[in-house]
Image 1 (cartoon, rainbow, N blue to C red):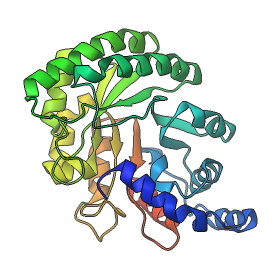
Image 2: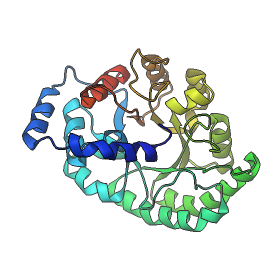
Image 3: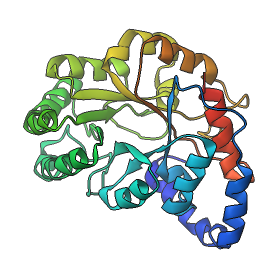
Length: 293
């Protein structure tokens, strides 16, 4: 599965049948998600909305609360009233736009629209107490690293004063360009860290997607320890395949989480894998337990 966008389209096909469960059946499932233990609190847990798109947002909110955490990633302003009703925090926000990761800040063609979308949503986030707003470089399309970096800086120079005023952090996601997002520019943590250094603002950081960076460059724990000061958020996913983060894949997520905690990190870690278990909420519960170090 090459992208969130494609995954969401495919999930939608199966969603009709899966969401045909009665309210009673879903309530029975939620009641079965009894917490085996109180979470330790060293990791702030979250889950990406799109990976559980077969559930309504109401259902997902109830499920995560029952498992024992209270945050959902990658939601838009239209989602926030429902989340607030359940006491669920928006740990990583989208704008009201289409959030196309291929058309990002490295290309001046998209600057006017992107800047408008970011400047519109930042005050709305601030009013709700939300802190992190995702952004992307977009594809290279023949552009060299230095030109792309300078173009990102030009756009962010117009966004960051408003972000700083509202205590919102622009968070640029690191994605692999080998398998899932061909030609994506911000595909190495070193490049992203250099952009952070040049911008020199506490309101611009990186989203370190562990799945993507394992594919692109590996050396996960050392890179986390080296660049942690530039990282504001983490995503998970099993390699290969982007499925469960258990022993069927190549990363030791317990060790990775311990390394994150050792850096003093206080932000969120969001599960962003595509579940394959017959009951997909069992996958989420397992992942939270693995990461709860």
